[in-house]
Image (cartoon, rainbow, N blue to C red; front, side, top):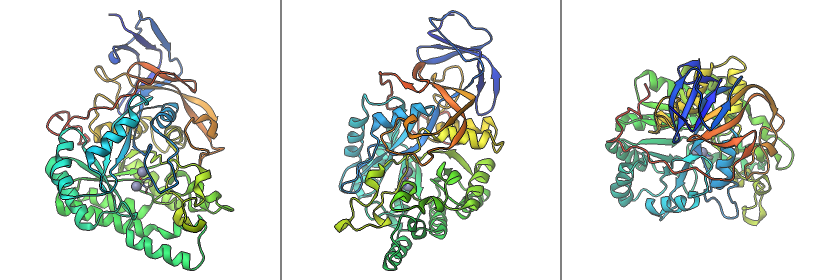
Amino acid sequence: MTFDTIIKGGTVVTASDRFCADIGICAGQIVVLADALADAPEIIDATGLLVMPGGIDSHVHLDQPGAPGIVMADNFESGTRSAAIGGNTTVLPFCLQQKGQSLRQAIAGYQAKAQGNCHTDIALHLIITDPTPHVLGQELPALIAEGYTSIKIFMTYDDMKLADKDILAVLDVARRHQALVMVHAEGYDAIRYLTDRLEHEGKTAPFFHGASRPIPVEREATHRAISFAEIVGTEAMIVHVSNRQAMEEIRRAQQRGLGIHGETCPQYLLLTEADMDRSGMEGAKYVCSPPPRDSDSQSACWEGLQQGVFEVFSSDHCPYRYEDEGGKNAPDGKRSFRYVPNGIPGIATRMPILFSEGVGKCRIDLNRFVALTSTNHAKRYGLYPRKGTIAVGSDADLVLWDPEREVVITHALLQDGCDYTPYEGLLVQGWPVRTMLRGRTVMKDGEIGSERYGLELHRPTPSENTQGCKRLA
Ligand code: DUC
Ligand code: ZN
Ligand code: ZN
């Protein structure tokens, strides 16, 4: 048998196994895993390297419209470029429906931005902000049937929040048509109240972002979202969980047998509220929502990863330039944390951080690392087994990983469109040295190829999905 490419001498790691094998690739797919393959025009020496499924980051914002005057720092080209630098081969960005827009218009807009510009494969989640009867009754069911099977909703933000009755209505569409609702769980009214109070007291620095959305704000909304999913009788994913109380709400729901899933992100393992407490507007570099918390919250997020409460570890890459962070969009140039865009970059640093802090410090093993960064994303969002594993018939989406390489993270390494990284100066051990998308090298030693091979993936519709992709084994 001949191959296009052979990867020789590496240690293959999946979510369940670890073994030495060569990998034979033909027409973009893995066709053989065996000892001592030979005979291919391209032979890649992976001696001393781990060969893992390419990272899948299921929580990413690219080219998303925001407040007037604020432009997201990454488009599909720069965002997927940085993703490939960090060992990812698939990302799932959000397609935001703006008020008054149809879902089809929103999708067409994102597809136009993505087409021909991606270094990784992509699949879009929908964000519903305007749940009109037409959207819920016609468009959404039709789009779910076409494979847009994941939908994010917000419980906060002036222009995005859904009323409780609308949250219930979206969950009900998801129940009837077998989609998954992803919930941003922070309560709007409590945040409004606290923000007004803090501003009245003159507490406007970025640091007070944390005080405007404390842990009970997230816990209450998490509890409400879980209760709504239970009342409707459907599953839900609570995204970007930041603290123990919210994690415990999810764990309790899981212990009661509910289909409630959880996600956490690097910022909740490494950053704390103290990072927002810097001079001038410097703290704005760490402003995201939910905010970074405290050391007990970090421990709880690690526990959630270790115990399986969180099945996915995503970046929530939501990049804004620091030069735009300082309240550029504030009325009358008023400076307040209220006007700092909520989000930080992290698409390239997600895997190295979890590898170094998790595997390197014996908090998780290698198989769990692969599950949390790739396999579970593919399973939950309908891409498995095409993506998320190393098996005969799967796409040859691979990351070759040097477990010994020490790297000091600096923004220049990451090749995103931002002007900083919150992890500047962090020493990590373990780094991706080659990223391969459907058998083609898209990143080698920090260099990105000039071709953009990334495609929008068709996700199986609920009726096509015979692999049990939505339910994790
Ligand atoms: N929610 C996200 O998912 N990302 C960044 C900001 C936010 O509120
Ligand atoms: Zn969110
Ligand atoms: Zn997000």
